[in-house]
Length: 470
Image (tube, rainbow, N blue to C red; front, side, top):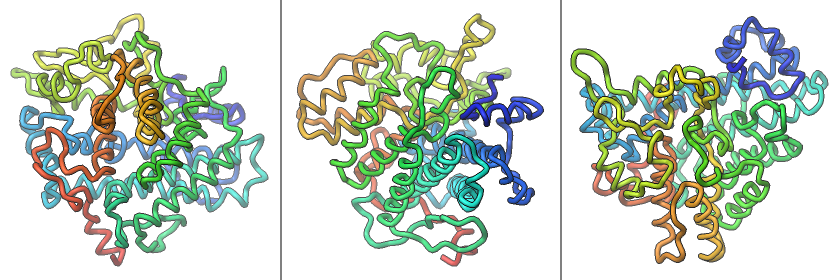
């Protein structure tokens, strides 16, 4: 029954158990052929539709690869592309160089756009039907499903903005993407950066109100950390406010989540062998029972007569010096988070193949895709705190949790935070968004010597221009 990850209340869980198998539950796809009246005839149908949206997000074109350890991590210079496998070099060099004109790179971008709007269409179908069917729900299921759908719509739109729009400080009055709030084939006009952030915050405000009684971490409850929960909503608000440069509200929201202590930093020295993505710290993650197998195919060296380099590969010298700063006590860097495999030092954040067949295999917290961590809220609090003493208080809590020494004072707090983003979100994609938010002129270790504001902006897909009337 470990495949059953997305149930959220007992009444819904009972309905889920009537399905033919737990494994099939996670493989549910949106029932696009089914009439909406049939799908949304009961609360199980609404939950199935919402699960379909979460599952869609785990696709390789989205958070199952490209928007986490794939394309975005390549752009953040997490890898040593020239040392990767020959196939990887051909495919990833244009990505590393931000060469948007190369066909395969444009293909990644176009697929990500389509995949994200597919998720948005699914949540919009839920939102267009749920109010009229409010009476079919029991307990707080109506509020939770509607709140999650609104929060997901905001989450996915905001990530699209961070890809296809300029940074907020360079926003101007240009229009870059549609904020779609209806289900169907209608053509939603493009919005400005400011309009998208305001629409996302409006969805989150409504979600926050609906989910006020959301329970996270209750004994016996389903895992709410793999669904948009009340603390993920507040965390996303903090993330957006920081992107907008509103430090006051970013600090306020980050502090709310930290002070609630529903999701906490790991205790110093806590074993990481069976929880390598630190799932206990996830404010919001996805679950896919196919995720680790895909990661294995990308991170482990090829087999055959001659062992080939992994697809995604980082030189040991770069990992040691440039990213993790030669700090052997950092739990994010030492074994088992990094392991030597066939002569290569391999990131093991997503992998457990070294424990295959061991007695601990049944308790491994595998197949999680982290999208928002409590540590990010500590970094936001540090960046937006009213004074350096307060700021370092938040930053040092993360450092202590990771096995590192405290910082007493620093002339460059932002640089300390930047170093943490590289380590904490290594192979997760968030580091790219950090650089973009600050409109950084340089991405460390990138072959692009100087980043321009326009370099950070993904091109609109050609099909969107052609068929969307852009």
